[in-house]
Length: 115
Image (tube, rainbow, N blue to C red; front, side, top):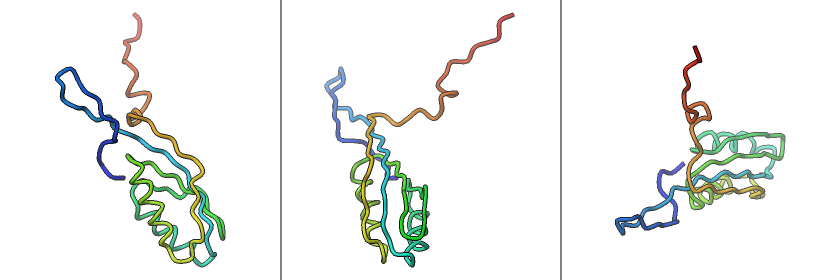
């Protein structure tokens, strides 16, 4: 996952342009030869933000979390370059303008027990 900011600029009260961060989540279906499965798993494990969700002999489902469309396209290019990969299909892509909260527990205000 590359660190960076998205392309949606905003202007703050000071007149200085602020840039909103983006968070992308995507799923990819990869068709590959049986012999390519180990190399594909290695490439995914070495890539930041990519996860191998499911894999059988000739198909894999990958999940991607990154901060830009360019980073997603870089990951697709990386997977396409694995020998024996026949096709990489983007089946889902969602963009948020801010990264998700670390956890709902961390975001919730703490309350003291009554008593």
